[in-house]
Image 1 (cartoon, helix red, strand yellow):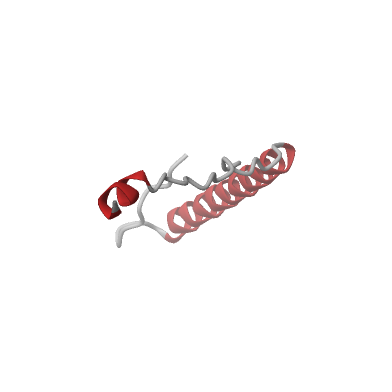
Image 2 (image 1 turned 30 degrees about the vertical axis):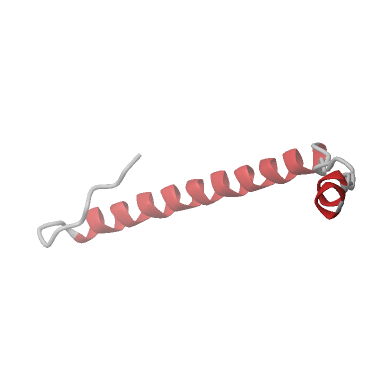
Length: 72
């Protein structure tokens, strides 16, 4: 449903008809956009947010055997 591009040779009724077709097409696209936005909002509401669970950090304690061997 695409309208023809108006040219200088078009008559006034042809130009008005093309304008009406473009207005209808714009309204249709606007409606589709609104529906898509509503759908994406409902999908994001239905799906609970999953927070990334991090593993508990364990302090790594290294024995000082390397240092104690040098000191001896």
